Length: 195
Ligand code: AMP
Image 1 (cartoon, rainbow, N blue to C red):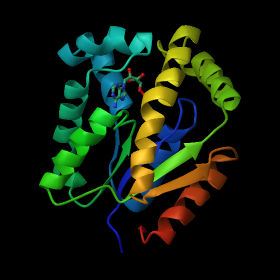
Image 2 (image 1 turned 45 degrees about the horizontal axis):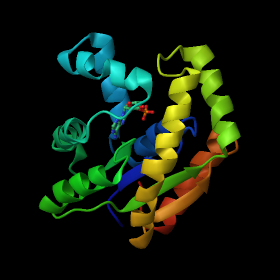
Image 3 (image 1 turned 90 degrees about the vertical axis):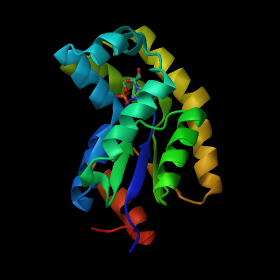
Image 4 (image 1 turned 90 degrees about the horizontal axis):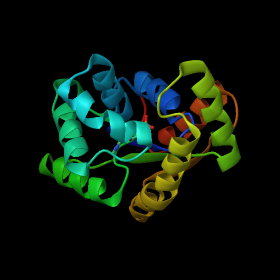
């Protein structure tokens, strides 16, 4: 059996948050979403929240040092000792280097990367729906376009790094929630990552 030290990656609107929580729950590891951490801080009006609100609303990336420090703190908590599922981090090559250094210091590495593949038109349609339902401040047209372009230019290249390590599973992200969860579970099982 392989420890579940996982990353889920996909364009905004790919459903990675929902699938990440489902998979983490099934495996009994914490789901760590940097987007959720930032949003919770904005909502509570913490100092971190005040620092990042404008950046997030504009669809830009929060500075790497700040984001990496938050993830390090979170992964140092006891519940992440046996495994974790990262959602939304790392998101560029600098963050990959930060995470590698941190995990390497513990004698660990990522064991699996789930790449959710969703066509651009489909993710835009889902984001517009989410904007109407949830009213997220960063789900406006300008911010969505910026986030999708950051995904293509900065986040997609991290997948090449992980592909070279042989740990990426490409999962078709179009279908019912259950179908997609099953696809991911099957791919992880094939890697020896099971509950
Ligand atoms: P998400 O919920 O993953 O789409 O993240 C929402 C927003 O939080 C992003 O558009 C960024 O502004 C910020 N954010 C989340 N994760 C990161 C990250 N790894 N690096 C920098 N900014 C991030």
